Image (tube, rainbow, N blue to C red; front, side):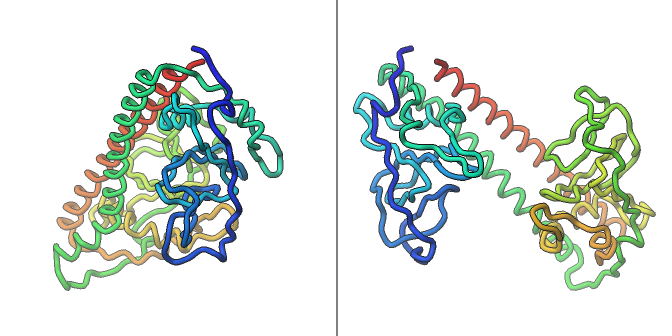
Length: 341
């Protein structure tokens, strides 16, 4: 496929900086290095424009803006695109491209208009361009629906516990127990380096998904809470091992504390833990923040009912997250296939 330099088919332009003190409460979206960063009373682009972050850690991020938007000097705008190039085709291509060779600077990464202008762009007919656009838009539409499903489910998880308690017993006041009195809370013992790619058992750490390992230290029913990063909570029944900065929570008396019920409670309590977390760049949870939790404890039947539904939500979240990952892989595969030079 023939190629042409990016600067030969468009104009690359940076607009004036817009200090944050000039932002307004109402107005048009302002795009900076990290997407929309505020509002302003006027705009510098009437129509959607391709914007490429050119400074900072997000250098090389590609966005297509909303209409009537202000793009600051932290992004390079792709303007006056040649008539035989469809703007969305060019957007998808730049999004798929490896822009690392065009980034300079160590302490402050940046992309200059001159360097970016040397990016080779594959040329094809407008019919082919339109075909590529339609295929990618269809896939991204499905991805957007999946992400909305996930967002709605996460909101439901946070509010479900209190709604379930109120529905079950109205204004009845349940006895409260300190979590440390009715649950055993310990930390994992392994370093992250203990993970093995083809291990037989899950290895829980602070990563979004479990790694694998060929040994296990735990066998039974547990809640696993990553002690820093995103404070991910997982219910697991079986053999596994865990990183030393994860908390392993086990019921001292399953007849008193049904662990899936605790899972439901902890889902809505996580925002409180995040607010309580200490530390500088990386926030973390101290053990006493868990042991001191005051847990309302209804009868066993109510706990089981709430716990069963909580686990169904957990499995549904896993299914949606897996579908999103597969859809993302599909988008990336299509980008590489369509724009292979």
